Amino acid sequence: MTEPASESPLNEAEFVARFHRIGEERYHHRHPFHLRMHEGKLTRGQLQAWALNRYYYQSRVPIKDATILARSEDPSFRRVWRKRIVDHDGDGVTPGGIEKWLKLVESTGLPRSKALQADGILPATRYAVEAYIHLVRSRSMLEAVASSLTELFSPTLITLRVDKLRQHYPWMAGGLDYFQARLTQAPEDSTFALAWVVEHARTRIDQELALAALRAKCDILWAQLDALYFAYVEPGWPPPGAFRPLEQTE
Image 1 (cartoon, rainbow, N blue to C red):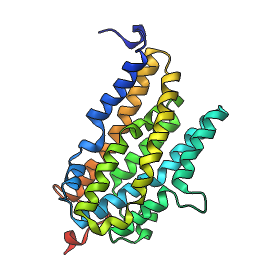
Image 2: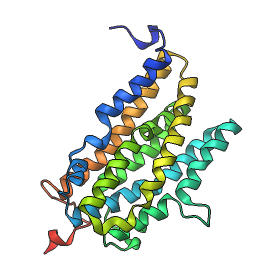
Image 3: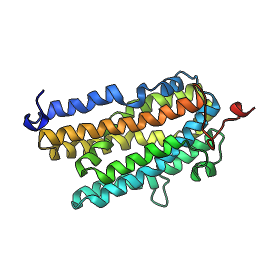
Image 4: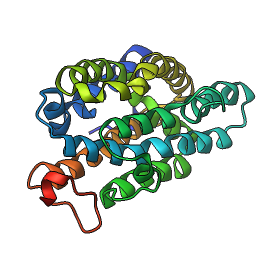
């Protein structure tokens, strides 16, 4: 088999198509936990566990973006990328994505304090999220930016998710503002990131590293849902210290 180092770079269309193929195959829209969510088959307790664990991921997104920002020596890149931090942290007047996710947690019936304290999150959630932070700190700048390209696929999933949450779980309707904002933010962010990766992946090795980084990010998202499924769906074995829905304790 020919090694990437000896191969010519993919043309732009094929390179971009490869990213989209990764999304079709590996993005977590195919995960059984999400499929059950969209079919209306999750209990309130399972949705509480999802919202609680996912908050830990959301709370680390601006830390991830600040890490990438600090690594860049290009002012034009930093001017664009810092918008992501404001989108999640807010600007002190308009609430950001983190505050909106706390509203989602509250819409499931849990207090926001439980999310803020990371009280009861799964060990696998913590490990997966920290693995993402480690990726953007330790890999090349190209790989760090490429790992964000799951945003290419999120608007389609978010549109479906909002429709299905409203249909099957109307008691969550007051907590869906996070998703509405991401329908415009994610396409803006991914358009810039994709163009930057295409421009800076100049060799076939660079391109393969960027593609591998996106696969790694998809694996991180998938692993978080694997842990939720194992703990709260089948076989339903939350580890010691993890959140336990009322239906699992009665």
